[in-house]
Length: 143
Image 1 (cartoon, rainbow, N blue to C red):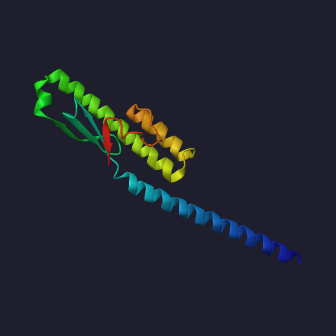
Image 2 (image 1 turned 30 degrees about the vertical axis):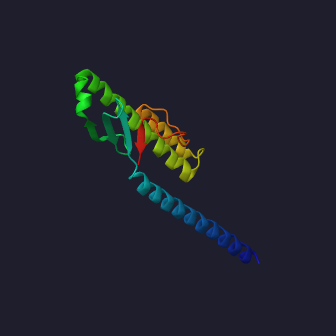
Image 3 (image 1 turned 60 degrees about the vertical axis):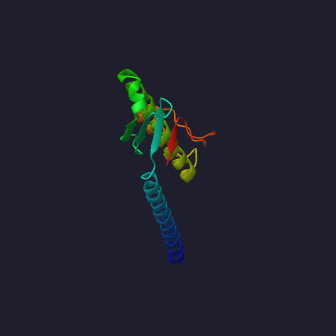
């Protein structure tokens, strides 16, 4: 009789372990899907009424910078300011897009969301918004 109780306990423990393994596999698959998704996120920012445009990848690294002839007519100092403004807007746009992506996938209050927001804020020096933009992205386009 005692043996049956032990066998039942072992069966229950095995079932719990199987459930935990399935949950871990499901979580790993979700993380991989999300990782693939965020690889495609970029941010674009503009300044000087669109005469200066900067695109960044999901890490906030510049992948493209475009300066129109019109912007150059404003002088080097103005172009330099414009590039920095466009970069900040592009980094803000990509940080917001990354934050929304993780919040949508895992929830606004999830630990991973909070960790991502903290990392983006620290690395890019921005305040990440998890809410959809009300009237388009701030000075930028999110792809």
